[in-house]
Length: 207
Image 1: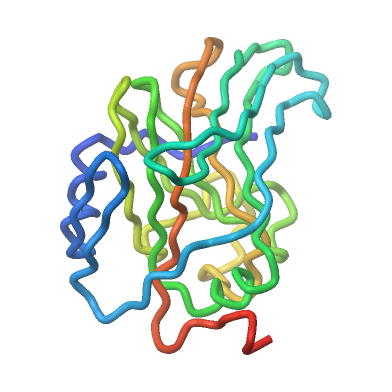
Image 2 (image 1 turned 90 degrees about the vertical axis):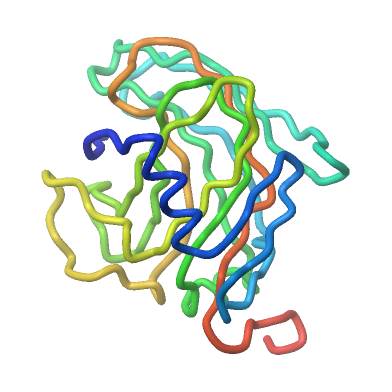
């Protein structure tokens, strides 16, 4: 599994400004647009390159940060599989899938280890793992909110192009260790995943 080139830390802050938001350690966010913020709900899981013959490890633990549930991942990326990787995957529930169709941007809180990761949007029309992605850097031991408009996600150069991102075909969101630093250990915590929806957000009652 390959990824695009590195995105500089400065880009992370530029994206936050672009969305008109502020971020703090506990994840309080003020939206400066007319988009509706919706908390994404679903199932988290830890994956590795094991199915590709790799030996990378990835342990997940559910913890609490500022009274909110968070998911802590830690492990080691090896190169037994040449392009070794570890994945932090989020599979949305029915309500969140419905809201993804109208999502213009995504944000999340991250407590990182100073290394780079790639956020990937999984869609049904991609067959070669060449999902739309956005690379970002973390700051070791510091919590921050990363906010990214969906229009900044792009398929990697090696992927078979499927045209523009089809939000109506989104099935999962993942964070993957970046190819720029493997092999090596990693530790990252993710929480407060939010969608910014144009128009009226879908609720349980609407399904």
